[in-house]
Structure formats: C-alpha cells, structure tokens
Image 1 (cartoon, rainbow, N blue to C red):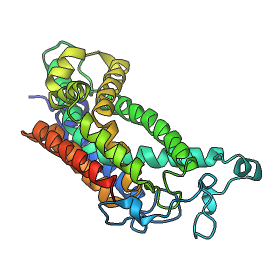
Image 2 (image 1 turned 180 degrees about the vertical axis):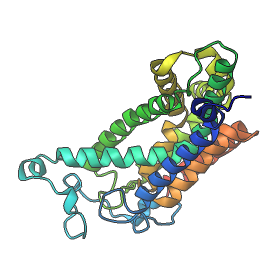
Image 3 (image 1 turned 135 degrees about the horizontal axis):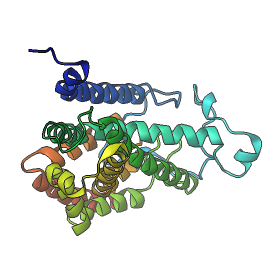
Image 4 (image 1 turned 180 degrees about the horizontal axis):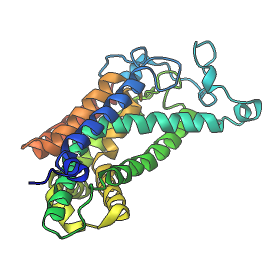
Length: 295
C-alpha cells in the first residue's frame, strides 16, 4: 500500500490547520485590542463599569479629531495644522481608527464565524473525495478573506461615523463613549427594536444555518470562495451592525462592552436557543434605553 502524498496528508488535516489559523488570528486581534490598538492607551485604561456611561462625561464642544491635548501617548494621533483647523483627521488617523475597528471586528466575530468556515472546508473536502471537484486544499483562506474584507468595509463606515459623532460632541474623544443621554438611549432602543425586525431574522437565519447557506450559494474556485465568504460576511453585518453601534454608547475600546457583545453574537448564532436569547436581550435594550433618557 502506497504512503499518502503530502497533499493527501494536508487534506486530512485541513480542519485542524483551519482551526489553528482562526485561533491564532483571533488571539492576535484580541492582543492588539488589549494593548490599545495603537491609540497610546491600553484598553484597560479605557474600560469603565457603568449602566449609564454618558453620566461619566460632561457634555463639551466637539474636539478636533483625536487631538487630546494633555493625554500621554497620543503622539501617533496628532494632526497637522490645516487638519486641526478644519476639525478633520489626517490620513494616518483614518487608517489607525479603521484598523482599530477592523481588529475589534476580527476579535469579536471570528469565534461565531468559525463553524461556517470549518464547514466550508469540510464540504470542499467531501466534494473533492467524491470527484465533484479537483482534489486540492480547500480555498478556506479565500473564504475567510472575503468574510474579513466585508468587515473591513463596515469598519471604514464605523470610523467615519465615529468622526462625525465626535464632531457633534455626542461621543467623547477621550473614551470614545457616549456623553449624551439622548444619544445613548436612542441607540439602545434602536438596537433593541432591531432584534425583532424581519431583516435581523433573515440575516440571523443564514448565520445559524451554515449548511443551508453554503448549499444555496456555493461557488467553485478561490474567487468563488472569496465571493462566498464576502456574502456570508454581509449577512453577519446585517445581523450585528446595531450591536456594534452599542460600542459608541459604552466606549469603543471598553473591554466589558466588547466582550459582552462578542458573547451575545456567539450565543445568537450557535446556541440552540440563540434566537430567544437575542430577543430577550432586545427587550432588555429597549427598557435600558428608555431608562437612560431619564438618567
């Protein structure tokens, strides 16, 4: 009996390789978030515990971009004179804030995306064994890349929204959390209502049934894998975008809020009662948001 080739051994271990790669990616993302994502302050320093984060801030006029005079370690966020005069971020600041959001999305979404990514590798391997496609390592990397690129697009939008909210004085430039009761309450209520919306239900259905998603949208080859991953990422964004908006309430780099939202996303997608968990939390958000208007 001939020994298996290197390719055959690789095909048999693709699940372990994929899982190890996702674990390393997730751990690196969390490590980058913990050290402050290049903002000059660790996430621990930006983490506070409060049901009403806006109450910790005194509303003040919008500060220019990320220019936080008097705070140490923010040299990397400085802007040139022209940018400061127009309350705009420089190119380096845009890149840094977008990267911060993208890294957080990778840290938060990788665990809930792992089942679909692993299933994709398994389906590809089974198709290769049946002779339906050419036997080769599954283009799992392309699928994952497509998924992450979708979240990169979301991160760019989130960075732009952060800039706008800071200019309006709704979000603190120091803690990147809400300093307005009306903004906090509005976001919480909107997030709660969205948990019951048809669009949320549609997107969550795709995320909770990866086998149906893959069979209904399967595309061959590396390019097809990338497009399939991007489509799956789009459903995930549609499912979770209001939850991510909650970071503007508690603080974009607040570890407690980041971890809580990540656990909620994971529970919604993989727990047997995930739908009911999401709806229960949605009701909690609505009550919390209404209470916030009066605090």
